Length: 225
Image 1 (cartoon, rainbow, N blue to C red):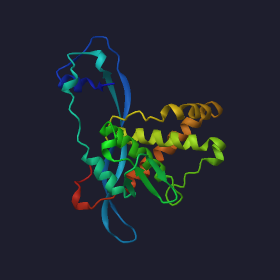
Image 2: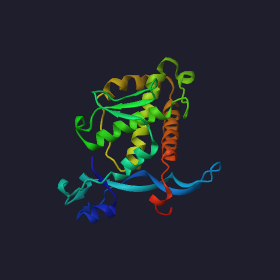
Image 3: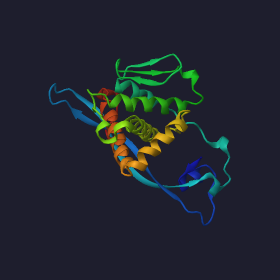
């Protein structure tokens, strides 16, 4: 499950084996852009996504790779993002859920997660649900997916969480409820083959919305690239 570009493997002291074919991916990046509120005139910045295509090779395709060479990345930018979005997140208990009645995200304490990546992946999943509230994106899938709208919304949340994990360079983790949801997702996709495109679009919309909500003070950021 470890991948890297040709240059990244070289920098790690590894060499891609001759004849290996790469896999092409798309990186979702972010940049901070100056904005001015048209009502108050207050200046600040917003996160804007951008996309870059790149080629990667798997660890099995290189020589000289050792797992201990991989250094976990810092995720200070994730905490900054979560704080800037401003969602009401309560930690405690043993469930992860979004309460629409209270407009609040419930998460277990940090020590309950096996990995940091799993914690952030779960947080992003619930944050995507939070983005769909009536006073935000008002994401209503009942008209298109009927009784399967719950499964559709869960898949939107999973896709959106994966997009945010890619955005911040986090290794996403499998959720324990994935197996339970899988049959429902397959039902939706079999009945409506175009559903995946629709839900991916909704997930992308949610990610862009969350990034646009992460407004921070201009003095805390550098000039946009």
